Picture: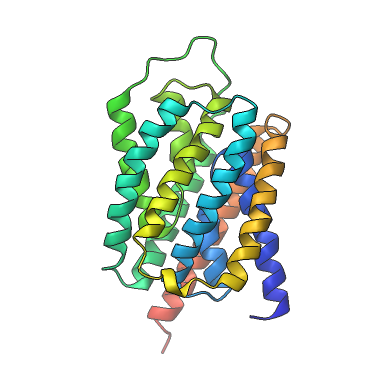
Length: 257
């Protein structure tokens, strides 16, 4: 990898971390395309690397939110436990699929995430939380965990609104609690990845360190940046990367004659 590509990857690592700390998700969905398209990492190794990066960054970023009292541990553990089961299943399923199929699935997930972020209205903290709907929390936790294990995306774009709507958490607590869920399911999904020996440590270690620093910055900025503007800009970025990823896969598998 060229020095320019290395600088680009590490600069984007900061964006991944800031998004995790500020929004409770989102940045993790960029980790795999950054590692594959910019860093030149093989797709399966990139998925394993992403789960390691996202799991570590979320776990350490969680500390900042916990100190501020923005983590609801009981709900997070229930959601996360379902996510762990799903992540293990997704990781095992991913072993049976070709790398190209995994990248197309990731691009589709990114498009869905971008649309969800664009359509979602900001939700402010509630005076009276809704009654938790545990059955739905468990179902969605399993689905999101499967997604994490399959394509290396943490699923924060689903976890945060689920914690607000289904578990009755205020927005600030949902963001902090989502990091607990993401950390649990990412590290569990990592255990089921076949490409663990192929993780490019020379790139992943500095990527993780920068993403962790970004998550601390994002946590400190929580509530200081308008959520709507932030989500719109990030959604446009995710959508652009998804389209580029699809074009890349079409060029690889459907070459022009």
